[in-house]
Length: 442
Image (cartoon, rainbow, N blue to C red; front, side, top):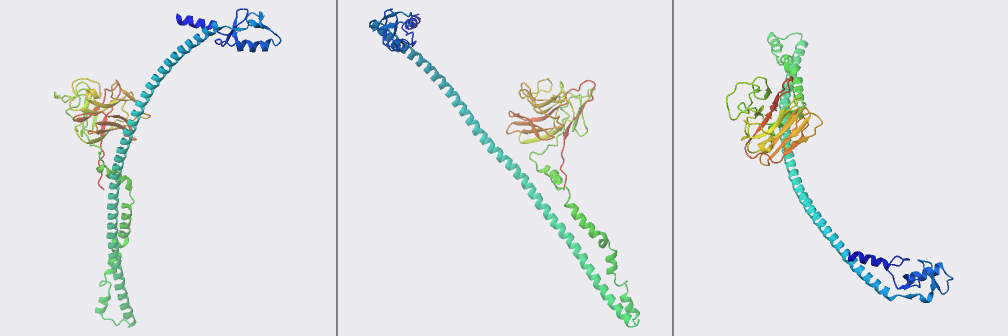
C-alpha cells in the first residue's frame, strides 16, 4: 500500500513538460510547477516576445515573471522521492541480478556436467575405436596370413608340378634326340650299302633292319608323343587357372574364428507338433502331434526346439534358413528356462531373440518389443554370441547387415533357440533349416 502511495506521490512531482521528476522546480502564479529549465526553454521557443510575463503551459494563464521562483519545499520532496525510488530500484535490480546469476550458475553447472559426460563418452568412444581397430587389424592379419600361406603353398606346388612336367618333357626330348641319332646312323649304313651295289651280307642287313632299331617306332607310336605332352600342359594350365577365389573362399571356412557351427536340433527338446528331418537340420510344424516321452527338457506349451550344442565360453556363429516363412523366433536361451510354461521371449525370462511377424514386422525381444526396419525380407539369419563379452547379435545373412545387438547376454550355459510359430489356418507350414558350410578339400 505504501509502495503504491509512493508511486502516486511521485507522479504528482512530475514535470508535465519532460515527464520526469522535477529538477529545480519553480511555481508560477497559477500554482503549477515546472522544471526551471523546461519552462524557460519552452517559453522562449513558444512565446519569444512575452517580455516579463510567464504563460502557464497547463492552463494558458499569464503571470508576472517575478513570481517565477524556486519552490524549495517541492524540491526537497522531489529529492526524497528520487532517493527512495533509487533505493527501491537498486534493491529490485539487485534481486533481478541475483536471480539471473543463480540461474546462470545453475545453467553453467548443467553445461559442465554435460561437458563431463561428453568428454567421458569421447574417451569411451576413443578407447572403443582403438580396441575395434586392433580387433579388425587382428582379424585381417589372420586372413592375410591365411592367404599368404595359401599363396606360398600354391606357388610351391606350381613349381613342383612345373619341374615334374619339365623333367618328363626333358626325358622325352632326350629319347627323341637319341632316336634321331640312331636313325641317322642307320640311314648312313644304308646309304653305304646302297653305294656298294648291294654287297651287304644278310647279317649286316639284319643289324640295319627296323626290327633292330625300335627306338623311333616306339616313340612315334607312344601316346606321350602324340597327346600326352599337350594334355599334360593343358592339365597344368587348367589346374592353376581355376576359380581360385572361390576355391580359397570355401577353404577359408576351416580358418574362420568363429566359423559357422554345424548345428543340429535337439530331439529331446522339440515340441510334439514339430517334426525333425532325418539329419536333424530341418524342423517343420505338423498337424498331428507325434508320440513323445515326458521329459522336463521338452517344450510343451509352444512350438519351440533347442540346438543340441550348448556353449558357456567362447565366440559362436551360426546361420538359419527361414526362406519366405511369414513368422518365426530365433536366438539363444538359457539352459535353465522353464520348458513347461508360456512366457515372453525376453532377457528377463532367459531368452535373447529376434522375431518376424506378418512377413515384414521384425522385432527384437526386449521389454517392450523393439521394432527393426528392413527394406527386404531376409531369407537367412546369422546369430553371433560372444560369451565373455555377453553379446548376442543378429544379422541378415543375405548381406551380413546388422539387425540388432543385445549387450546383456546370457550368464551361464546357453543353447541356440528356434520357434517355427503356429502356421495360419489354411497355409502350408514352412520349415526352418540349419545352414551348414562344409569346407572342401583342395
